[in-house]
Image (cartoon, rainbow, N blue to C red; front, side, top):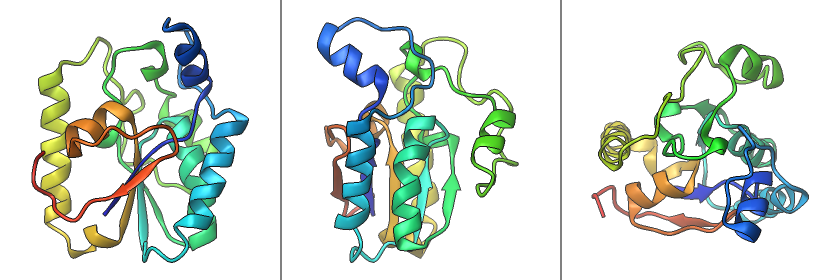
Length: 176
């Protein structure tokens, strides 16, 4: 399995510069983030990926899109791999709007408001990571899967601290 953190978002750019929440719900990728996604599409061309599982946040969907086009693989949207809800960027977009923006993706299995209303605990994020790990262990396809997610979730899932647009291959599904 390959884990990838979404490309740089407007939130990431502002937060990195100021260390203050800029108040941007569900931010889009910056030009740099789009370039990171395009680079990943080229770099992962021979990685054997047969499907992409992506978080429903816009920045993750935008990161996965050029990779899916380049590799011609299906995209599965899964809110279990969303970011830990803590900042303004973790306020999502309702499913109705996502389905309009991404008509080729199936959102029918996701609730209209799929993100929490309050800050998520570390324990809750750990439980989601364990659930996803179990889901992946139940399928042979996990080795050929690209997971496009977020810093806190990927850190919890794998113990790896990935920067925007970075990816890492995971050879085992054991908890970190």
